[in-house]
Amino acid sequence: LIMNPPLTRVSPRRWLNLQEFQSKKLMRECGVSVQRFFVADTPAEALEAAKRLNAKEIVLKAQILAGGRGKGLFDSGLKGGVHLTKDPAVVGDLASKMLGFHLTTKQTPKEGVKVKTVMVAEALDISRETYFAILMDRSCNGPVMVGSPQGGMDIEEVADRTPELIFKETIDIFEGVRDDQAQRMAANLGFRGPLEKQAAEQMKKLYELFVKVDATQVEVNPLGETPEGQVVCFDAKINFDDNAEFRQKTVFAMDETDESDPMETEAAKYDLKYIGLDGNIACFVNGAGLAMATCDIIDLHGGKPANFLDLGGGVKENQVYAAFKLLTGDPKVEAILVNIFGGIVNCAIIANGITKACRELELKVPLVVRLEGTNVKEAKRILAESGLSITAANDLDDAAQKAVAAITKK
Image (cartoon, rainbow, N blue to C red; front, side):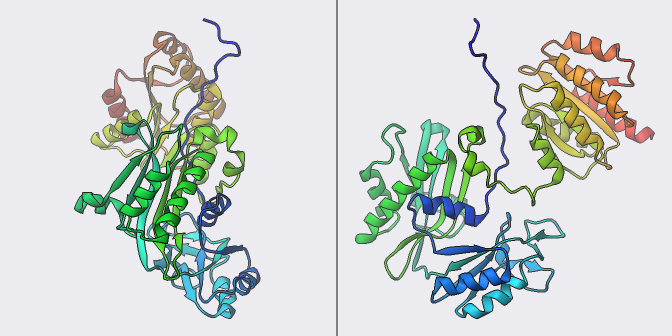
């Protein structure tokens, strides 16, 4: 069978993360009710934004990709990355102690994250909080709406303690969200009278957003009502199908890599999944499950993995070279363990990439290689005839032992 044009393999990726103001901008563009807000990069812009809002109360939020901002600490001495005030005049001063300074929370590195942007928003009172989400569900073979009248808290905790307060509606992808479904969900979430219709409309618009941006999840917690009778999405988290990047150029252009680990960012350029760890044995594997197993067995034999690097499927020689360049660039790495099970992956391609990388990068650390699967005989021949100092392993357990032993001998 000859495909014309030939099929191109797409490797799944999972690293897009948006700032709060970016998610709310997408929501606002789809008609979803969010607080009025402006974004500022300087204290003067923040002060001007506060005046333009002309709100009874203003909330100033530092924009970083980490939770726990409200209880965070700036190296300027300011406590908290979220501040409420009724006086627009103080917003500029608060912003001057946020912008350009590092904010440390429970979810940031020890040194914190530098704040480059703040969101200046209208603060609204919330008389009642609910939970609402749209997500892809394997059991439903498509999207499903999930809601609870218990919002503003951990939804897993609600599901565990009071499962009867979790409501679901399966969405037909050809029909979309029906009026009766949206109204039933709104009623189950406790919206009454005119608020029920308003909430149902918001749910339908959130589904429009879900489809428009190729989301895998849109989670609103809380979806609240105000004393003035408004239904507002106060906070939202959007997860995207990264395989849809080719048709979501505008969304993916929002991706900010400043807060990411530089090695993770570099790996992403080559469709590699990299997570740095604190050990000294680099793990070079294909498949997340195999990567976790490799890390575990290294630990079992008394070693410590230096990273989690997954090549995925459809790997090319240039990706193997890029992976080795990343691993050898980490000063913590004292040995490299290659563990490849070739199914989709051709072991010969891996072998050619390894030999090229070893020669061009002048590899100085011990290298242990375990290959199995597609074209493995040719791969082993390439490695054996390379003349390089490569330790072959029969299986993963053998590879882990040899990698740990190589470091011990040093």
